[in-house]
Image 1 (cartoon, one colour):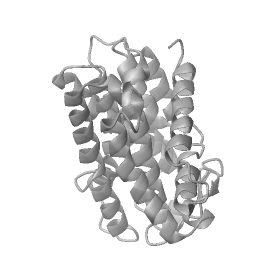
Image 2 (cartoon, one colour; image 1 turned 90 degrees about the vertical axis):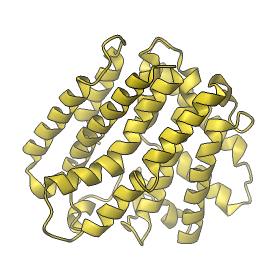
Image 3 (cartoon, rainbow, N blue to C red; image 1 turned 180 degrees about the vertical axis):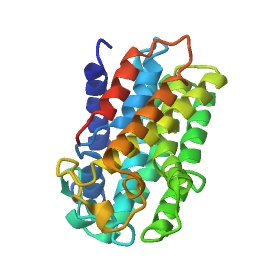
Image 4 (cartoon, rainbow, N blue to C red; image 1 turned 180 degrees about the horizontal axis):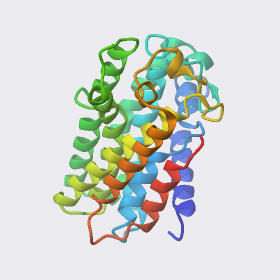
Length: 294
C-alpha cells in the first residue's frame, strides 16, 4: 500500500462488501439493524491500528484484514450496547440516531449480540470471511484469544461495569479512572495493535509490547475524547458525560491538563515500539488522533 488512505480505502471496500453479502435479508429487521450499525461513518481507529502495525513489519495489510474487521465489529457492538437506555441512554452516535432509536431496544440488543458473535467467525471461518485464509490456523487461535480477552469479562465489559458503578459517585481518584479507561478503551486498542503484530508473524515479545503500546495510546485517546465531550462535532450528544456525572479526566482536571496527560501517554506509547520496525506512519496516525477535534 502506498498510503494510509489506500489501506483504509481497501478496508472500507472489503468491510462494506462483507456487510452486504453476509446480512443480505432486506426484509429482516435484525439484518437491517446490523447493516445500519456497521455501515455508520466511524473513525476506524482500531482497524487503522491493526493494519498499521502489520504494515510496520513490511507486510501488505491483506493478511490483517480479518483482524481489522473483527475488531471494528466488536467496537461497533460495544457502542450499540453502550447507548442503550439501561446504560448511557444516548440518542445519537456517529452523527445520526443511535441504533435503539433508529429501530428499537430489542432489535438493538440482538443486533449487538449478533455482531459480537459473528466477529469471531470473521477470524476463524474463511468461508464466512475469505481473507481469514491469509492467517494460519494456529495464528487464528491466537487472534481469537487476544480479542476475547480484551473484549470480555476481564477487559472491555469489566470496564463498562466499573464505568456504570462509578457514575454519579464520589470517593474516586486517578487510579480508579485510569483502571476504567484501561479496560473500557485501552484493552481493545491494545488488542488491535497486538493482533496486527500476530498477523504479521511478529515474535511474542513484540506482541506484548504492541499490546502495551495500544493501552497507552488508548488512555491518550480517551483523554482527548473526554476533553471533547462538550463539542458538537463528535457525533454524540454534547456534554453527555458531564450531564450524567460520568467519571472522566475532565472530572479531575482542566482541559489543558487533560491534553498534557494525553501527550504524556502518547510519549509512553512511542517508547514501547519495537526498535526494528518501521513505524513512521503509525506514529503520524497517533499524532493525528491527539490533535483531532471530532
